[in-house]
Amino acid sequence: MSKGTLIEFPCDFPLKIMGATDAGFAQAIVEVVLKHAPEFDAASVEMRPSRAGNYLSLTCTVRAVSQAQLDALYLELTAHPMVKVVL
Image (tube, rainbow, N blue to C red; front, side):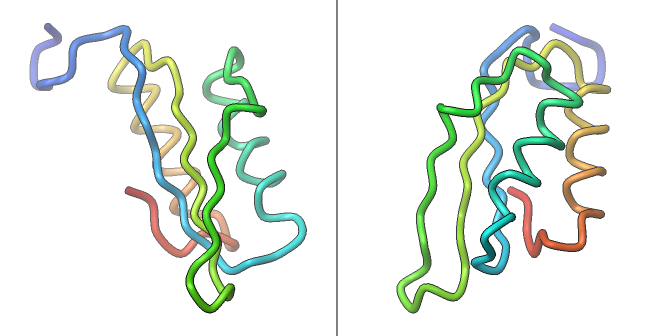
């Protein structure tokens, strides 16, 4: 186990990314995820629209190899203009 984290690496780590329903949202998020986790399979993205259809939730499960990788991915996702929330 890495010092300073409770996560044991490597591991499968699910990220839930929410944003407004937009034609390019899923593709933009997959591009960001692939920059940090090149082996990520875009076909594995789970998509769920909100009840009213205004928002889209994406679940991307990446093979995380370090806390630094997850931190960099989280920072880029939260800074993305199309992203509302990352969990």
